[in-house]
Image (cartoon, rainbow, N blue to C red; front, side, top):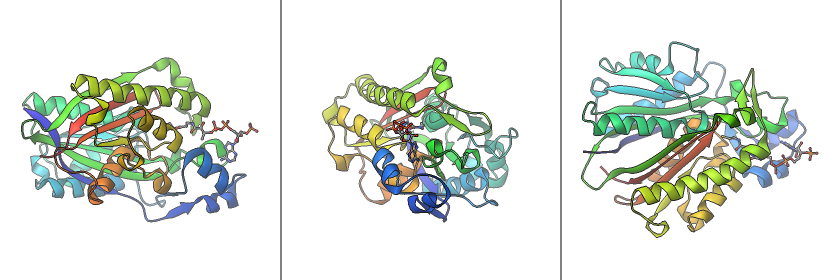
Length: 310
Ligand SMILES: CC(C)(COP(=O)(O)OP(=O)(O)OC[C@H]1O[C@@H](n2cnc3c(N)ncnc32)[C@H](O)[C@@H]1OP(=O)(O)O)[C@@H](O)C(=O)NCCC(=O)NCCS
């Protein structure tokens, strides 16, 4: 049995905060942010919108897109580092609000690699034949974890949600290979105490190396080569890090998803948000080979190679 993605959805808050808006509240410039990160604007959720509200909106779309009912969901995995509360999990909140009566539910804490951890976990349950439909949500309200007085981090992040349904797909399609990893010795470079604390240069070096290696590793595990890749969806943290992965795969610019300029780094939400954007733009066709790759605090990383289609 092959597990793949059978439904997709996303949600982004309406409020746009541009680099020019940030110039008014901190010592930064549009020029610095664009050239160092590729970010032009980000979405910020209002005070009344919680992580669970954004996750719910994305999940509802993914369920509808999959053509299933909430009662058909067996497991809900929510990748987030900005849950509404320490507990209950956002996954349990969604279980109730969706009416997913028979679903088990838990959150996944792997920072910006959380969606990759979620999707790989979902794959195991589906391919073992024990669950038919797993809802995987990546959602963050990073604006509440951001120190708006710290220009080193405040310019980087945004809010949003993406969701997929993982279920059985036809032979040859679906998730072909994966890699997950962690290196707790790097925890000091990126963590949240009250707010997000980051050693940008160390995280940058780690990300460039790990993203490229994980891309190559999942291709090898799937018996594929760089030439087989039709599309790359990297975690949208910084255009320079994304470009390094693209160059490692020797892909042309138009074959890499880029949403970082519009949404900034939405952590666990960035890969599923980008996936939905590319599908809606008609850039991904059935049987395309797609590599998704993420990295984040922990340090953590994860990647999959997937042959698209149901
Ligand atoms: C954060 C990052 C963009 C910084 O880019 P960089 O080229 O490494 O910049 P540096 O760290 O060398 O900083 C250069 C200068 O810009 C300053 N600076 C930092 N943020 C700034 C901002 N928003 N506006 C203007 N100047 C800023 C620094 O204070 C530093 O000044 P100094 O040299 O006088 O001390 C980059 O390191 C990065 O993207 N790292 C990875 C972060 C990441 O992806 N995090 C999420 C992981 S999921």
